[in-house]
Image 1 (spheres, rainbow, N blue to C red):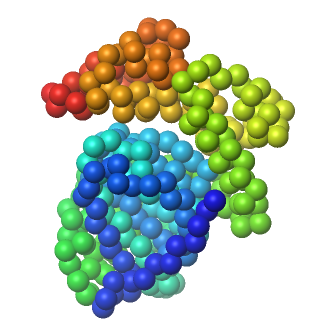
Image 2: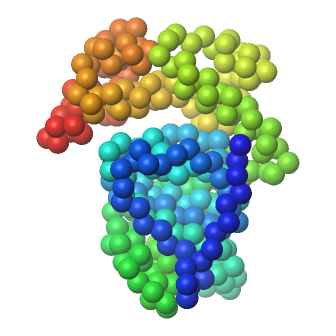
Image 3: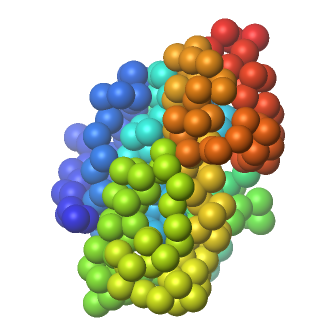
Length: 280
């Protein structure tokens, strides 16, 4: 279930900056929320973003703005190899409501759906995220304002959820979503009939398909394929045989696996192995 997390600002500051550079397998699945807005900057690597009801994968780092009280899991969970990130957590109140900050405040309101920014934006802000974890006092505050100003001026982003979460419906949605995720996690290696997952969701098949597309932004089949491909990535980094990996991850033919893998990752399973495992 979703947990409340209490955020304490750093000493001498009105907000908190965290830096992680560790093996990804130290991260545990921790689905939580807090009143503070959160900026997550992942420097590189492959991993999973779970924000609200949205679950998807990043491949070469990530930059996400998570609005106040929007539940999310840590981005290191499900990542491959080393995971390096800067996380900035700040109360909305430190951004003034004056006309000069109107664009930033509008963006913070949008961020209650979760905003994922493009790679060019992430690269442009990389140095600022390096600097913000090393700075203090007024300098650190001004860096945060600069970052938010830059983000508020771009259209290179997409919303991770269709709408902001309402507290009175959140618990019910999360119980259903968690049942779906648990079922996929336990059964992705075999054929899954849509009627099975609709049944555990207490929905008819048409209602389930509509619910899934509306809440997760993709069809169930596309999501399942994405999950299977990312599980395959974990096995491929161990230099396992590609054919064996395909069947272990629920694909009943090597050609379908290769085609689906390329659609999701924009490279073949072999190319992925060379790039991630061998380092070529």
